[in-house]
Image (tube, rainbow, N blue to C red; front, side, top):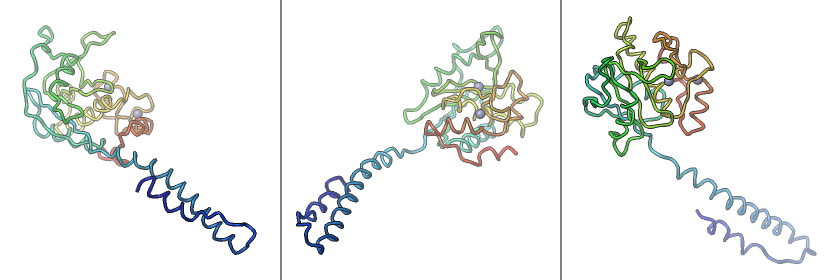
Length: 246
Ligand SMILES: [Zn+2]
Ligand SMILES: [Zn+2]
């Protein structure tokens, strides 16, 4: 239905009649109401069309295992975590080695700041984001702390993040490692979706790790403020997402 098809029927029933005759009042009133109704519809229909046009398929997040790649259950936990919190599809790429340009020999660990742009180059054309996943230790360059080992690192409002099981597995069994690594994935992809570290509550998955791995264990959900920010940018988090940890 377009603008013309709505307005055209109104034109023949707008007679110019004498107002002296009472019997013409109701037909004239009806015609006037109908023409106003048509005008309102003609204004509303074009406004509603862009809403229909922006319906898009879910964004695709690619998991890129990086050698030494984590076990399949770790990859599955990351996939489940992302699917529980974000309206996305998750696909897995074949495992590949990390680039030597990211290797830091003095500390025997990988530079996550080098890995992030390198991962973006490997993002398939239909993908929105790429998540590197490795067992090896990774670090970032902290202004105060220097080279600092991290669980994960993600670009703010960007396309890539990288996650390591190296520190997340310390002092816990496999089941708890899977929970931790899934939470880290939700956190880093949250950065990719534009979320900064959250100060609202320590139970928010976007809280800063505050340099302690154990702080992740207290995180259970994205807080209302983080959900609202995601929703404002078109990312709708399922209401029951956080319950999976409890
Ligand atoms: Zn963070
Ligand atoms: Zn939050």
